[in-house]
Amino acid sequence: MITIFKLRLFRCSVAGFVLMLCALFTGVPAPAALKITGEAGLDWVSFHYEEPDPDGSIAYAMKEDGSMPAVFAGISCEFTEFEKVKPQLRALMSFAYSDVEYNGWLMDTETRHAVMPVKLSSPNAVFQLRMLLGLKNTIDTAGMTVTPVTGVGFRYLFNDLPGKWGYSREQTYWYLPVGIDWATRISSALELGLRAEYDYFLRGYNVSGGDSFDQSEGYGYLVSVFTTRAVGIGHGLLLSVEPYYRYWNIGQSTMTDSGYVEPANSTVEYGLRCSLSY
Image (cartoon, rainbow, N blue to C red; front, top):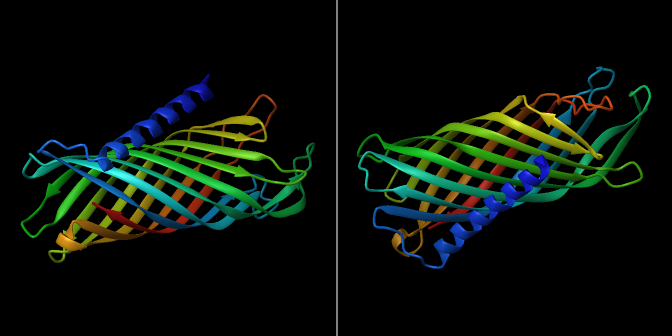
């Protein structure tokens, strides 16, 4: 029942997001007091995932390393009728895919100790969807703004380990982002900003080799700097470049009836995002 609910919610979220993008790019007019902006771009992520060995007998239980290209799109709505504090709604969706290097161990099913190292290449896919609410505060006439942000985030990872002892692994995170965006205008066409975010882990589900695990403890955070420059005729198009660092730390899952757990794990991502908005 939980899996069916998650699948339906996921499909509804994606469908709603796609409909908003279609409405934006097919020319549906926005109300005079509402500024709608669409954005799209490319992302390059350096990815490191690791599960420590619970017994401490080896350096790690498994880890994955690699770089993943990604595409993303977003839409934002700003209520311009307010003078100083302008509410914002923002939806972002991204998808990354690449082969990554897997380093792990074959485990003895009785003693659950590592017996042989395993190294292979495995496909890795990450889908993310974020719905955010912000309050854009104008600080002075020079163009400085501070925007507290919160909302809900969804992250889904699929990893397929090939070979005789391979298995598929799915990770689902639901989390509450709480952050702040700071930006200042350097010139009429250039803006510089800083973004910081703490991600409160709400719930996680992990399916590994046919076993299902619940995870309820963890956290994440994101730090980035960005620069936005007006380009094109009439400066109607904005080019943004944003290097960022993201970290996840997820606690051990509950134990299944067969006595297995999904171990604690951490994920480190260094990325560079380039986008165009209008």
